[in-house]
Amino acid sequence: MIAERKLFATRQEVAAALASDVAASLSTAITDRGQAQLAVSGGTTPKLFFHELAHIKIDWSRVTITLVDERCVPVTDERSNAKLVRDHLLRLKAASAKFVQLYGGHGHPEQLGPFDVVVLGMGADGHTASFFPGGDNLAEALDVTTTKRIVTMTAPGAPEKRLTFTLPILLDSNFVALLIEGEDKKKTLAEAEKPGPVKDMPIRAFLRAREPIILYWSP
Image (cartoon, rainbow, N blue to C red; front, side, top):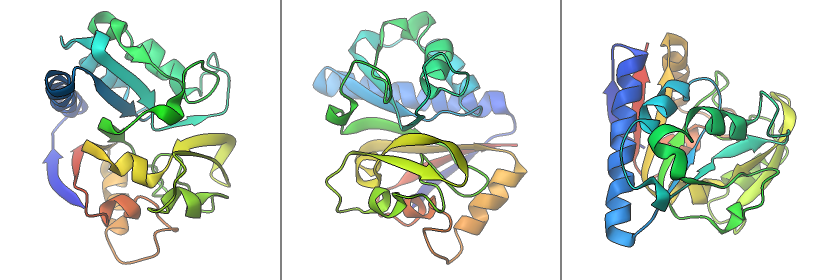
């Protein structure tokens, strides 16, 4: 469910606000447990947020960053979410954070979690993470009782095979944010909030969950 709607006038404002809130949540986790875990989304929307977050001073050496989902492409590919994170987030003050790739890395992403912060995006078709309408493993990814933490996904709306954390893993977080921009995405979200099958607009799984999410939006 959307517990709070934070609406801003510009992309710069929403990026700065989300970065500040994420950094505060990570700092709280570090104070409480000595470490923090952050899962972020790819695409074009988070770039400005990544830039803002990389400028904030926290104890990044105690933060582990991973991806909500990933395309099964080399890290050198421009469509790689890992490349996006390396180029735009793992720099400046955040350079000392540990990064665990979902695809092609040497870490063990299946051992991560529960996350302290999850930052989601949403596509024009109502997908989030790699929960695509028509996805071959969509039912399993959305199953709140699944014991799998990561599943593969191929779908008509996704040209490459993907990996994605499952719904229960992403919901098991202290802070879940949904970052979207533009009037078209706002309309898509409004449509998703109407009655209808989750499989048609998978973002509905988060909108209808009892766990709260916070919306961050700008034109």
